[in-house]
Image (cartoon, rainbow, N blue to C red):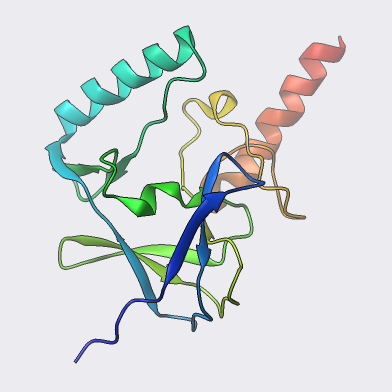
Length: 168
């Protein structure tokens, strides 16, 4: 029998807007919450993302993209209110990770998490629009932008080149 999911609390975050916090101690490797929403095709995912980003550029108060890659064919649109996992913020020093198990996206504890700690994971963005995704995690590891950890060396080179252009 599967262990019940740990209690979580949703409240204001220092990282960004709303965050998710551990309502009890959580052990490394434990499933915390499933990222749920509407299963959509990649084509529909691109259409929705473009629409949301256009609205965001017109007015930065307009929402965020909560679309999560499920597999090569489908994504999950996590924007519905019933998806509490959408409030988990990015961090360059995360305490959670994502794992796709039998067609379900799970947020898992990457290390032991104490009650009251904010839950975070690395969103794993590529570098296509890196300048549009500044990071506010505040961790000592922070690279300044939301990107997959394996891409940090490339990102640091891009940031260095950008700084050189703005100085000259």
